Length: 292
Ligand code: GUN
Image 1 (cartoon, protein in one colour):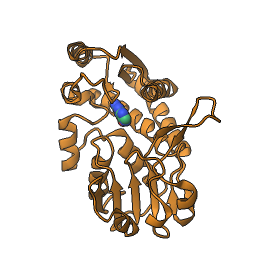
Image 2 (cartoon, helix red, strand yellow; image 1 turned 90 degrees about the vertical axis):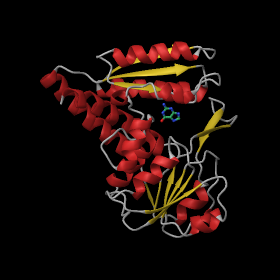
Image 3 (cartoon, rainbow, N blue to C red; image 1 turned 45 degrees about the horizontal axis):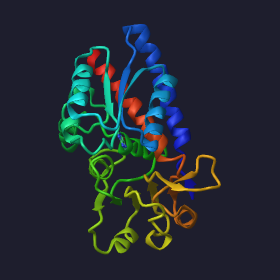
């Protein structure tokens, strides 16, 4: 069993971006600039956005964080997005999800200009992804693809089972794995809460991507020998022994599943770090596409 180490791969990606950013600045006098919008004070979202901003600094990007109270109106968010769309210095716009309940998320996401949609959530980006065209790929599934590529994991002709059909992870993941690319060319089964015989389907998988957000969901009896297991779950569960009061748990029962696997991602230290690395790649691409 080999660990797919998100720390090593994310660092490699970040170092590459750091070098490219120096060149971009020297040759084109351009510094990639990410603007992040955070509404409310959800602890996990706060952490995610803070990590994204810190990572921008690490690779030499500019970043702007715009905060709103939990009771922000849709009009206020719309005005903020419009301003960022028009700001030529801003290359990428990220609106951290979930948004407060009074906000219609689609109304906000659909307003981000597709050329700045570094999360890849805009319908134009999704449409391009489905057609295999160059676009911004949502950061988490993009990060998983970078991880598979780094470790040279054979995916062609394999049966990949994706558990979870969210717009952020499961659905784009299923599209990417089925594409005629490397990694890719999998036969994909997309499972969700209404799937019957999930355990049997998982037992037939060469690759399992668990992206449902239920800690410890994937158990050893659902995984066949030598499977590749990718754990996308990042759930905070109460843990009084931790200073923070919580522990981060993945969707996989790691202790019992890992011995059966050929490769597996840990949580933390796996896909989460790759998500940020992929977002930086998208932001760099947004900055350079403008120059071309
Ligand atoms: N919430 C959970 N994951 C994500 C993500 O990748 N991007 C944004 N914007 N919000 C999220």
